[in-house]
Image 1 (cartoon, rainbow, N blue to C red):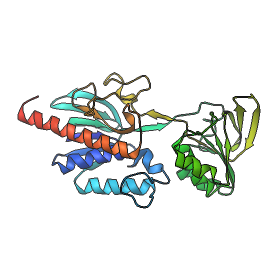
Image 2 (image 1 turned 45 degrees about the vertical axis):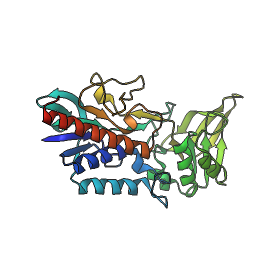
Image 3 (image 1 turned 120 degrees about the vertical axis):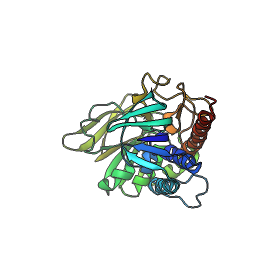
Image 4 (image 1 turned 180 degrees about the vertical axis):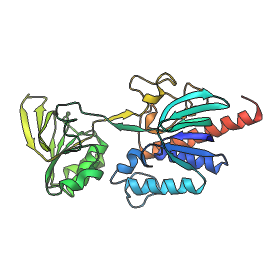
Length: 309
């Protein structure tokens, strides 16, 4: 199968790119290995996206984006990209299920939660260790849980969990949270949230399920045990860019490097959203990236059509 533009990833960046390419009259396909929405769809509450008078869930916002893009002709394919290589008439994207041809490719594969890397994390994943409060929070209703992290995502999800759980410890290595002021104030005003600052997790304890987390105060060295049934980790992201190794230039962390037009080091390969090296990763910035990448890809196709490339 061949597309004019093939998009890898159906999060906000990918869906926006698909909308713009399709609306411009070109055939756009979008590969997604799971379900549309990406990390954004797992967000319990979105209130800083322009045009929303009332907050909505990330799932609902992404559902609307998908429906709009499909309306203009975006074709979604459930498959996983494994490489992007030069091919006859453009590029070939090899996937787990076969391969696709394209005149241009937009990589919008996003990022995934970073592991904390402490004993017990992998052993108890799915048994109390989670990276998604919206997905797994209801399993811990009326129990105590711990949220690890001090950024926007950590505090947003801590507030969400406070509606369900009797106690929410928020463990952060610094003495102050680094989230935006409105989220910090919201969390600190929630009676069920107990900040545990200047502390790091040394171990997640449990046999069949999570029983506790051990935390070490970085100033005193004292180790405490927090009795919890669940641990939610928000300690950063890792880009989903391994399949591009040796094909485009990435930074030391694996983020794809682009210019202002979202073009990577490889001709006709663009990148957008959380997979790209940039200073701010939000739904709004992903949408902006997707629009720019789409129109850059369209201009590339137009140049090919005119014989200028």
